[in-house]
Amino acid sequence: MSDGLVLPKFSVGVGDRFAHQAKAQLAACIKAGEAGVEVVPVWNKSNREHTIIGTDPNQTRKAADAAVKELGWSKPYFLDADHINLKTVDRFIEPCDFFTLDVADEIGKPAKPEDVDAFVARHSELIGTVTIPRIAEPFQTDVAFVKGVANKFLAAVQDAGKIYRYLVEKKGKGKFVAEVSMDETDFPQTPVELLIILAAIADEQIPIQTIAPKFTGRFNKGVDYVGDVAQFTKEFEEDLAAIAFAIKRYGLPENLKLSVHSGSDKFSIYKAIHEAVVKFDAGVHLKTAGTTWLEELIGLAEAGGSGLEIAKEVYREAYAHSDELRGPYATVIDIDDAKLPKPEEVDGWTSKQFTDALRHDQSNAAYNSSFRQLLHVGFKIAAKMGDKYLNALEANEEIVAKNVTTNLYDRHIRPVFVGK
Image (cartoon, rainbow, N blue to C red; front, side):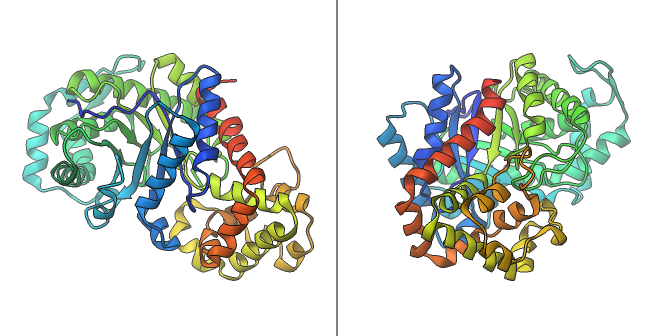
């Protein structure tokens, strides 16, 4: 099962809320190449983000193409229609060549009983003793277990199939990379559950090249992983084993790899991810969407003067509209209101005080994860500023770009892909 366009082994999802940092982000991928590892960029921006900011996917495409041309990038690069469904996909079809099929709303909805029965009948290999190479203990399943997993996920996979076939009809087979997102569910999938999901995806003939499962722990926006690193490591390695087995058993694309959603700043698991992909000779897609927007704010604050004033204004407004901004992200942020500084206090801060609180440096006692998370979801405030914000980015392009590149390469690409 192959789909023309191939996503290379290592890729990094880069979000660029205001379409001004494509060059700075690509520079980080160039640095990876200089370190001996090919990491290709996937510019991702969701329909929700486009709607909030008032942008269009074609603008993201233009920014990416311009950066690639200016920096002479000759390797692959992609534009991700992030978290699309049949209602939102149309505006992304022409500019995008990577589609994250978001079926979260269908997870847990029962599939038709006859479809579940047919799935179980087709897959007797999933019932009884299921041995997955490189996982120490075989899994013991029965018909009731497989039916239960199918009931939870089959409707979602069928929905992904509908979106995929619609894209083939509108864009053409082999003209895009397909990812299925299964991370927005209550509990992590076990390796055998992931295997059942992959069998269903193969039945739907979706040639997925990445899958985003649910891992244990909290993957909050823009801050470090919260959870048991040893348990995450075990799950991640077992998922790699399940994928390798599913590729051979079900004819899924050979380059199928894990995608780590909300992967921005999950520093405490980056070593485990790197060591696992080396151990299994596997690929990985790391999604780092909102980090760039925060680095823009850090750059503006660092620049001082009017840049610092804009950063303070964004915080003041974000604080005043906190509930509204948090709403859409309630499940992926943990903000302690008691730790949020009052805007009057922030108004008196120096550049260093602002950047120390915002920059994700856990060795700095001034770092404030609640402050960072509120600003992470506060990009709507900057969007409302319009040209005032965009002009500030352009006026301070050099210092902003330096922060964007340094953050993406030193804190994300290097530990995950280069391993140094």
